[in-house]
Image 1: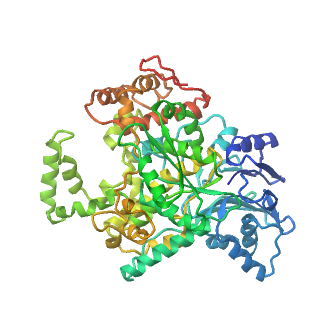
Image 2 (image 1 turned 45 degrees about the vertical axis):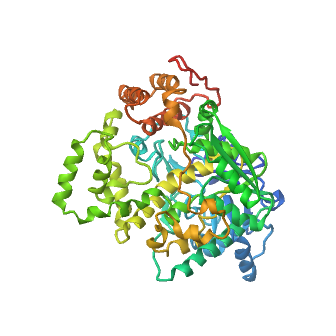
Image 3 (image 1 turned 60 degrees about the vertical axis):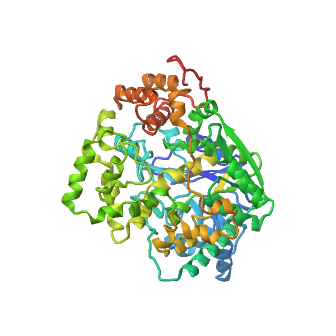
Length: 628
């Protein structure tokens, strides 16, 4: 796995600046560094050796130096593409998928990206046309940041490379407002003003002195077929088996994460068919009910594979937080990002490549909230006036009273109640917390265009579609990439394969939400190869006991952080402290709202205030507890 940096334009940075941009992402590629320079563009590259170093040094040139490419990712069908290109007379100097990409581009230009099966972000420079072409994979597995400034475009695999050049950064307040709803900053913006993300399934073109042109080459859609259940179930198993086989291609050992759920278990079971000695990795917590290590152990024993586990303490969770958020680039207030960091650390001691189950929930309808349309079905028989009356009654009930939330959700249309898998703060809560709340910047308005494109789907498919365009790319894949790359480990996600998606998009909702569970057809397809105790196990996600820690071990530290944070220009701190006190007294669960603020404040220290990320955190229950 790799990381790249690049600048194209009329006022290029110095070689020393380019070197700093590349050095700051050494963790993405500790094995090798390379540079390309001419008067129009500069490119830098860091490489982690997964394939023999002699086969894929970058930047890589092609066709007598006309094309130069830097590429982060893996193309799983590159052997098949290469063989086809050879028949067309193309000659190759290496065996790398990097050269396959640039060779394909030399023939088909932007159409080439549609043939790639894998995870990727790359930049190709055509010195004859003086034109740059860049692209990001279909789902957004690999990141791509860019910034336009004074005739230049700065590009990088991680945002910190761009920040390294532009030390003075400003918070993008519109993204902050969305962040407090979604727990991440939705694309294409970032939480730093003017730094953007190239969206998944998009490419970008720019001539040396021309304007940036960004276009979509692929968009996910659902198209349920009339195939029988048994036929579709067989397709699911066949395509996943093939995808795992492709994702196991490597010159180094491949391991796999293993939790207590169907997704990672299915991946391990299929990977074991390729490598019976595959190692698996799991993490958990000391608090009962917040660890699936015992389930993972039981699963590993049933599959007869080795399992290596690690138990995380509240102290080290907090101690590693600054470093984790430095690696994250942007604040992502998903508590599960931290355990992912630790399991990647354990994996890095044994392997360079790991498989994981990201994407299964979005493709096969795995989140528990996807069952909500069925549970709320009775409200569809109530006339509009009746719903309005019920809404008024619900508002009169005290917060926390059983049934209030059910009535509120049942009387609210899907497009207004479901904004994606995470909904941390309401607009009224954000208005109270933020000093400069923008009424015209409601998060529901960000989601509406997505719903408009999905208007003809059933409610479950609409929810999947929203999550594919928000939650998956903004949360799930961000933490997956950044937490594994922090330890120089390459993460591969066999569910997020365009061939797998082509099968999943054709499955009717009644086959996904069935038998009182989620992603039923996936469970059924894997039934013969996974342990019985996993087959119908309810999805737990990655539970983290932050609500307990905020009342106890972390209270003094959080109070000190909020008071000392240089974010007074953004937040009404008295409101935040009030939430913390209510949470400590047990007068409400404000853990996720508080965690979103905490994560942002730590990130602000690192990226805006310029505090060192790798200092130790001192744990204390007193207000004098030091953070950094």
